[in-house]
Image (cartoon, rainbow, N blue to C red; front, top):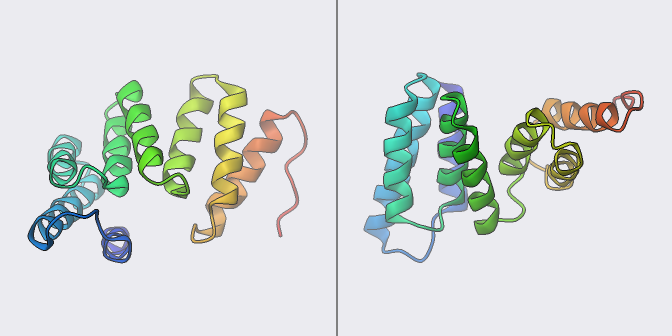
Length: 152
């Protein structure tokens, strides 16, 4: 449940697009519901809510990213990748989308693209938990064929 609160706080701070305040509130509400459904592993319901948030605010990067996570969890990797890329179209510095995109590219064997995505995540990770930054750095080192970097 703590994760849902963090997601809700991130939505509040980031806000939505130039939509009317009522639509923004409704989009935010749908986003929060979708994030909650992800936490409950109810991915189809999460996708429905996050899609509604996107319909209300087509520039809602966080909704695209979280819908990508739900799609990924359902095994719909191509659609998930599309949502991570759409989130990055909306916000090129959105670290969470870079991180999840990197994981997908890595799993698909697209090594150079995965390295680029991990490195971009590292550059955009000012607010990311340190554990994710360490994982990304270690994975880049592994993909490059070297030893894992020392922790800072």
